[in-house]
Image (cartoon, rainbow, N blue to C red; front, side, top):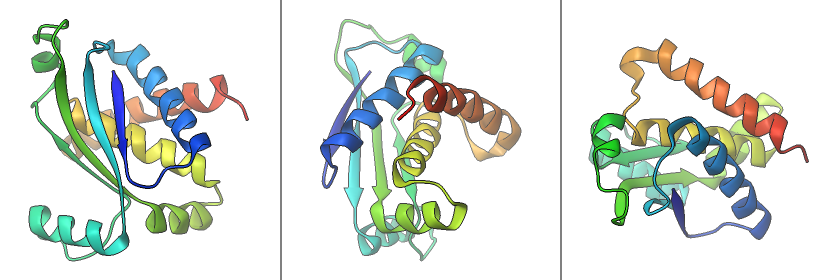
Length: 149
């Protein structure tokens, strides 16, 4: 799976994004021809997106917009064609605030919301919070232990 980064990302952040996507893909085996767009947006931009699509009038760390309902739909696609899995929006100011609040560095927080957003792109939802968090924790454990700083 490929990532198309739009907006503000430093080189080291892009490298850590690719690390996390690689680990994520080891759990889901998504074609290298498939991609998603990762967009870095401002506080006001993500607040507007959140209000327009989810009727929540506040900024948040990540929003995902999947094009497929679940992982089975993705695996049924022809893997030799290019396919977009959807769009993800992250908000740097909220990530920085959350990282400070939870005593993490920015990269860890970015990888956390990236994995969380990717799970939404392959069909996980908060309707089964336990299942989603278990998968998220397994992936993040591997990300954070396989790619030590």
